[in-house]
Amino acid sequence: MARSALASAYTVSGDAPAALEVLRPLLLTEHAEAAVFVPVLRPTLARARLASGDLDGALRSFEHGVRQAEHVAPTYLAAQSRVAYGEALRLAGRHDEARRELGGAAAIARELGMPRVLADVLEQRAHLDGDPGPHHEALAVRVEHGLRTSWTDSLDAIAASLAPANAARTLGASTAAREAMGCPRRAGERRDHEETVARLRRTLGEAFATAWAAGEATPLDEAVAYVRRSRGARDRPDAGWDSLTPTELSVVRQASPTARNRPRSPRPRPKGGQHHHRSGGRRHRTSDAAA
Image 1 (cartoon, one colour):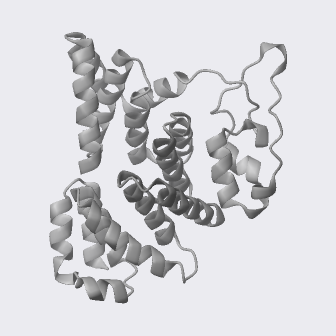
Image 2: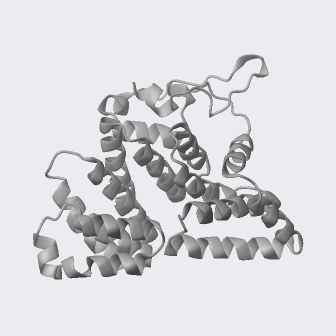
């Protein structure tokens, strides 16, 4: 247990090799790994392998752990593992399997009240569907519940949908916040980040350095507030079933048995040109709709 906790800390801080070294005395042979249920070790090892860029090894460890965990009562560890497994499957191009695991994670998170996991599910679904909307929803959940170390994940994801100068400022703010909190990007995230930064440098030219420096000087709270304002208005109610995007509605249907049979009625348009903002209200709208 102590080695797993230390390895998890190394993984979060960006030192996957150190995490794997801590776990090395506990590593099982491939045959034993498939046969023995070690509830904490296996997901910790899988996340360390994923963070190090060993996608095949991560998938193997996740597969053993998630399948065996299906035979016991739902737990926070199981929900976290299924989200991470869904991410690994997405990176491997196995999108249908990824959606299945994310649906399972959402169901457990809904049952046990896990906003962090629900936000992670929304984030992964956004990557799968190529839709920036759920990234904003994930950020709203993370802000509402004070999950600050995950705010930078949302900023990185949302930056891809912003205008070049705004994207550079947002990534500058995210990078500065990561350095301050000691939460660097993982191996796969670093590759995407470096490609995005290279593209922005080519697009902006000399203006890139100015925009990036402005972002680095922006406190995390201000950067998040700016990104949330940038989303704009939408023609949906603030709460209830008609307030949900298709992706959010899919998450609720997967998480709630009663939601699966909810009729899909047309969404009424607001009267008088009124617009509603997605972040309104203290409770998250997926929770309101499924209640």
